[in-house]
Length: 142
Image (tube, rainbow, N blue to C red; front, side, top):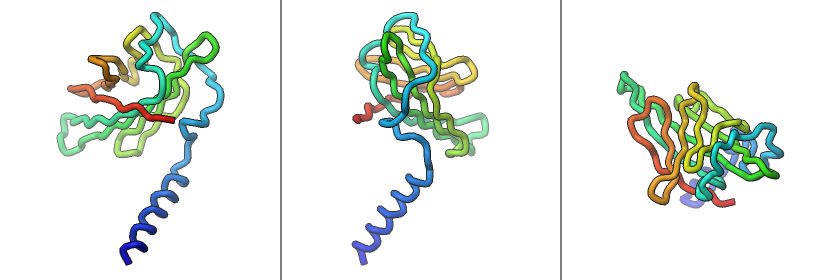
């Protein structure tokens, strides 16, 4: 019975991932927009990173859990950023190549997104407009 339960949980997880859709980060195709580079990115920012952050709006009963994942690559002589963000308990999502600004140790999204990804103390962090703290990100291999 225990093995059947584990199998069913694994199967439902795999089906859920397949239904969710979207491109896996290993198969994004060629970028269609590129970042504005003020200063070349810190090598630590290059690659795939993900992180989670909880924001508490003025109505503390509605904690908003943010999840972001990005992939920064060098493409020819340019830098391309694929960005995924999920918020409002998964009701809102963004998945696309972005033409954000790279300035050395930070990547900045435009004001309407309010996303800032940056290097600090040997780690990569992000913060979002309205958050009172930043969150450490984890490198994703592959």
